[in-house]
Length: 244
Image (cartoon, rainbow, N blue to C red; front, side, top):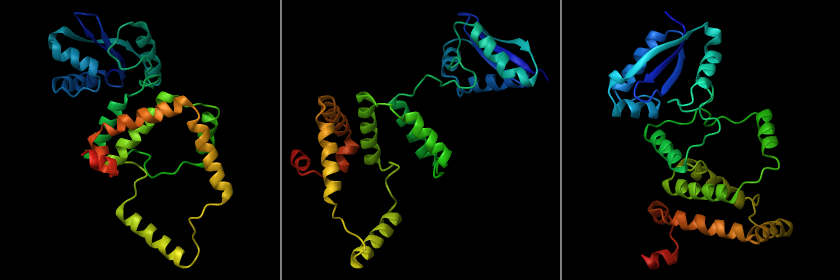
């Protein structure tokens, strides 16, 4: 068993995929099997394999090292090559500095929903320390108009498809309704907002819509959302029914 850093080199272009393993030969077999079945985790390497011939690829041992130095050595070799198949330049964080497009995120969401999968942190509340760190990291951070538009569009589509995290199940909605009805009957609940609260909400809306960029962003997000058939089907505005 050889522990070290290896490479998968394309003979035609010299492009290389850099990896490391405690058992290099076993890892090579896993790569070859995944590539042959077109299920490799690296899209660029998989595409090059599909377009070329397996004989054009060479598996090479770049360095033997201890288990403790695997990540460090792999990073050193990755930094030496200007053209690599690897998804990112950082071994421990391939997605650092990169972001999935909105289309890709929706594709991932659809796949997880079909397979009945949930995020690993779904249903787990953040600790007070984590919330404090999140709040501190966002302090003074202004969300761009483009980012706000993407959030609104994504939220509209999620609501239309019924997979928005704020959408409650039928059982939860029934229990909430029963609880509110009991609270109204006993005089413990009131929908009447105080004058101070009403004025605060009005002032906030006035400040927001006083910005021409905010108005344009809201209009654009609504236009994009309404272009989605699922969103239109979920909405029951009179003017939409007349247009149909």
